[in-house]
Amino acid sequence: MEFEVGEIPVVELARVIGPIIAIRTSAYERWNGQKSEEDQRKEAEAWLQKIPSRDGAAIFVAKTGGECIGYLWGNERTSGDFYISHVGVRQDGKRGGIGRALVKASEDLARKRGCRVLSTSTYNRFAGMLILLLSEGFEIVGTTKPEGKTDVRIELEKRLV
Image (cartoon, rainbow, N blue to C red; front, side, top):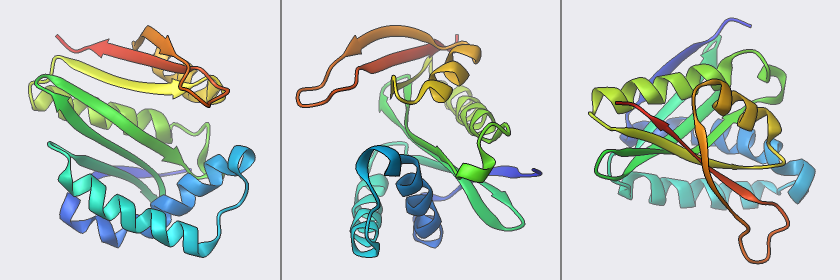
């Protein structure tokens, strides 16, 4: 599948939030069940409030034929640390290099901003994402098991300097 990845200004997030939430919803259906349109609308509203308030927030989208097929949201958490918060790829685009291209785009931005570390976390159930991150030079730096969760959160970092 041919696609292109680009950063969109955070102020334009409303333009692509619907497809982003639809991709996110489809990725979690296996574990959380199907979300109603109302629940998706509420999540979209929450993201529209949350993302612009984060320091150094960045949104990347992957598109094919003008249609959003993947996204990445990240932000600078501390001085020199760019954190990848969410990554999602539409089901029919998985294993086609879209997630890798989104992660690389965030790394390029982090380097451009002078960040020393690119960090993220994932869960065991997202084995494909874990493998992608390890193949891109991320290292596991810790694990936690959030209270009430059945899955272990895996913390990863990639040194940029």
